[in-house]
Image (tube, rainbow over all chains, first blue to last red):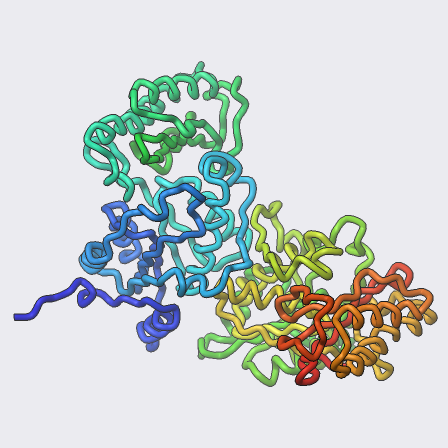
Length: 307
Length: 307
């Protein structure tokens, strides 16, 4: 009797050289084959699977990376307790049909203390850029490294991290990286909770109260249709809505332009705004910090997330 | 009677799209053809030509870029008076046999105010990094952009800008850029003056006194062979030697480890140093700032520059 390990079902590369060699083998007959890339920190859920499926549809070869990047965690953040489950991740990768899974060690990615940082300003000033100093420097740097290693035609990111999408799109445009960034809709549980690897930390009571995030976004969508509401009034209503969950501790709850992430004048009427707005939330339930968002052009309707 | 313009002798691309298209045409039959890249700020001299010739020898296709990058000039520096001569540059490019010349406008390279910076720490702390704040941020950023546009296998840089070579090598290694950086020896006039586009600004008297740079480096090479000399003593002798030219105003004259550009203990005997050292000079003659350097392992002899 033989048992099949998940690692037998999908090709796993743990070194940069191995990944490059395997990619070259896959493309040996035809260098024009396109590579789609889904960079993740693992502990995969249906959100990640949706990115992989889209990459499969749009590219000849799909590469998944799983790397919990120390550079994007601040002191006191949850690097050490970030959830990991390699075997389960490989099963999902195999099921979805990823062609290569790149799982480097920290030593492989950072053999010496890196002196180079890819720094994005502007779009990183507010939201997670403000509440997690250095976070996006770590994101920009590791995504640059992964892009240079994998050299994909397209890379797929979930809109749950809308600021991350804005940061990476800015970086790719500014640095002329030959890669198309494909933002994909947030995937939710049936009751509205946005999927996140961190959801597993929620107690049943926290899990139940965390529904206030998507409920508030759905409410905000209705409020944004009222032409005589100002940005400030909308923001206050959002804060009040989240505060109705007694365990919720707001990190931020802001209404900004998207993708510039600049702050509109609070006195401005929503009906007068021509650019899309993002309602961006980061809220702690116990030790677990969750984020969610919705993007909408008040004049034209919802854009790239659905709640 | 027809006249031939230099632009008829070599293929010039002024937009990113045009360059990419022309590169694709050159590689259409064989994607494995290698691209060598020589990024410059133009006003080409024999130093640049030597890089181009080496790229021609080692690659199937050679791309020259000419772009005076505003991002790497500080306020009050010589951006506006940096020498330009497009016609002469194209003649040299044609003569050496560059396959493509990329000459973008500032608008083409920076269509919007860039928010992304590629920042290298450590090796940028001293020398030109200290005396030209922000200079290497501009270099790292523009070289990243050019690398992403041209996607070369190899890129060629002159060792006259030894710190630039250290910065770019660090960046390429840290970010896993799939490019080999090839440092090439400084090219000199018969009397020792290192070639530089800025030499044209020297008055005959300044030109004559500027020979103190290479003369001091030659002297330093001899001094470094004395086993009982300390780093501090060597540095003092170098300062005194440069000061013997009355018009010389020293910006810096330092002895550092190469390529880390860290400072050795001044009390250390040269004979006890295992790592290579760089003697790096930046000296002003009138309004013109010149740099030069020599790299040597006191125990083993000269390494990558010759004076």
